[in-house]
Amino acid sequence: MSPGSVSVHDHPDRPGFKRLVLSGRVTVADAAGLHAIAVELASGVGPLVVDCTGVTHLDVAAFQVLLALGREVEQSGRRCEVRAEAAAGIFRQAGLGGLVS
Image (cartoon, rainbow, N blue to C red; front, side, top):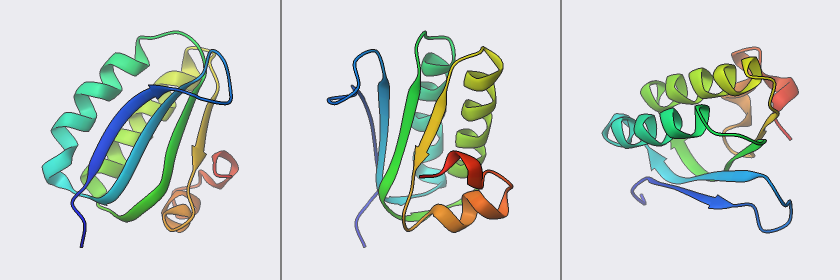
């Protein structure tokens, strides 16, 4: 089991987009750091891609932070996309399947 990792970068293929990258086991231990990053991203400008393709486990505390971030970004009129393979089911169960690609 690899520990969780959370980082933010400019998207390499999409100018103007920020890319929030999560990987490994993202658990409650990562939620506080993820929340601090999410607060900063929610107040930013431009579209956001949340990349969960490297996530092997996403616990409910981290998922709640992502839900709130997505809501805040979209309410501000910006676009939020989620890239998730292994974690796609949890987004669909929460009614957010339309965000996942």
